[in-house]
Image 1 (cartoon, rainbow over the protein chains, first blue to last red):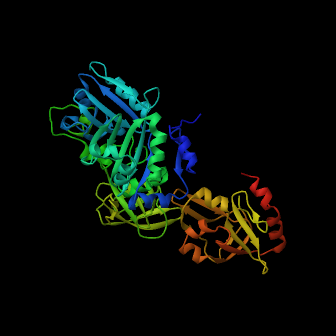
Image 2 (cartoon, rainbow over the protein chains, first blue to last red):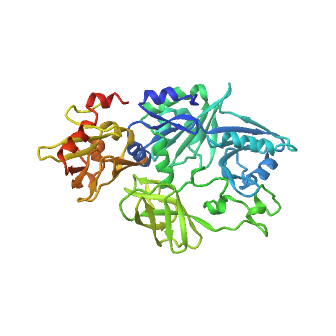
Image 3 (cartoon, each protein chain N blue to C red):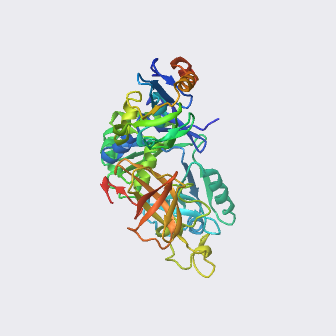
Length: 365
Length: 128
């Protein structure tokens, strides 16, 4: 039996084509993936992200526990509602998952993890709990289940306020990666598209009503297809595709999320990243821009002067009208150099670029 | 589902039409274009290539995925639709007007048998 979010009926009503995503029956598109993509770059679109798993963390040791658990350091979160992106590492610094953690107080956090990895994440987290005064509660199902809707695009916030004017006072002052409560909603200025917008976490029972009001405000429903092309253009990793337990954050372009400032802090995976026993960093995370005609796809082989690499995510970029990819390349390959990609029986030319193609409606290439 | 009665269909979602000059025009069905989603790239065969029925002959790429196109009849590729290759989204707009390539069979009796083995519109639409 596939899992369904509280918005399942809304998706069917909006004409969604449903697909399986990590056991969840989710919309891939509602007609045209490309139109949905453009709606987010040019106006406003919304995504049901209720399949992602929200966890509440409470307890006197919540902060020390997270400082041990995560590669990024929650100690720098001091303002209520402030969010932090982090990798969850195993002892060998392999990426178990990437997540967002919201700070409410030093003894109360919200963690949001990926849909397909939630089970193993929770098992891993619980294994690290003994000895700490902290409690972890999952909020994806049961009587206190939450739904999550991401509204994204240059006009997303304005359209959201049209639908819900009472939320404006709390949400308009929000800086990027900052959240605020409004009644029992959490409104966060975060997303996975490279555009401005909010991610709204709300009681599951409110979701269908809210979705309808957002539709009425002119926000276009967008499926996982557009979500993938948007995040790829923005150069954002997708867990399970661009990184997994075999990859360290240093090879996934995520060194910026590993916080080493507090040298006394001992987080899980740190000895495998730094010091004498650190694992070698042989690869780099880079972007590819296809110069010939065709479409780059995951697992295609990249031939460089420094050796072979592999595409981890590839697609046709609707914003650039050209194929782009994220790839793991040998460490010495320079940005700007030309490489070849094996596609079926052909070798096509591609340029190595920084892994960020389009953000805030602007072409960065 | 839209499947014109004057065409023959392969279970792998290609359509074929026998022309007056004995050649066979090939495209993908409306059902195929809908399942693929937004089509962004067509890799068409080289003119002059000799193919056998059932062979992979072209690739249709949507934003989502790449899909092989199998040629339903044997013969030589005599023409490709360059206009479609230049505007792949035209396959989404009208899958039956937007043909992909044309085959000239070497043996018209064999071609008739190959076409005869394909599905008619009613049998094709019954497959999904």
